[in-house]
Each structure stands twice: as structure tokens, then as C-alpha cells.
Length: 129
Image 1 (tube, rainbow, N blue to C red):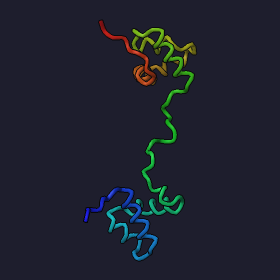
Image 2: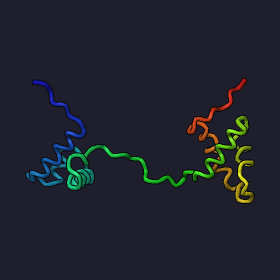
Image 3: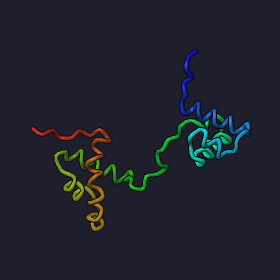
Image 4: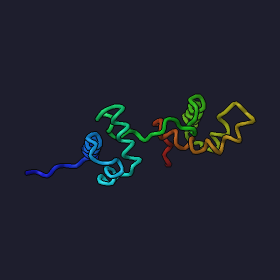
């Protein structure tokens, strides 16, 4: 007889089926499966809300990214990098925004974006000769 393959999904399914049968207290059931009560209740509430399909692993990506650049500023920075591929981040940040006075305070925040955006948007970096 072949060994039963234990996957996280099959363990979650076994857990919610055992919970639904009601033979064990939730705390005891969580201890039997080696999970915290918080995780056990999370799986049970997911199962109640969406059935077995809701027990699959969910994305851990945050809903929003507060440090992301807005699209207009990103396009401006990318345009500057495309127009002047040999400029470094400091020079590109200092000369790319027409907004003037508030710009120097943002340069420190934007330098990492000026380095990363060319990679993220497939802009070619100049090669050293």
C-alpha cells in the first residue's frame, strides 16, 4: 500500500473535516495538528466563508504600497533616464522635475527609484566601455 502524501491543503482539509465532526474541542484539535488556535480559527472561518476552495494559500502581497511613486512622477523619471542614460541618480533627480522648490526634499527619496525603475521597466543601462 502506498504512503499517503501529506500536503498543506490535505492537512487543512482534514482539520476542517475533524472540526465539523465536533469530536474534539478546537484547542485540542489545533494541538493535534500542531498549529496555533489563531491559525485553526482562521482556517475554519475561511472554510465557512468559501468552502474547501478558500483554504488554498493566499497572496501575502499588501493591498497598497505607501512608498510607491505616482504614475506621473514615475513617467517623468523614466523619461529623464531615457533621454540621458549616462546620468546618475542624483543628477537625473535634480534636473528632471519642473516643480522647483519642493524637489530637493524629494531627491533623497527618489534616488532609489531612479536606480530601480530602469530595471523594472526594461530601460537599458549604459555599459561601461
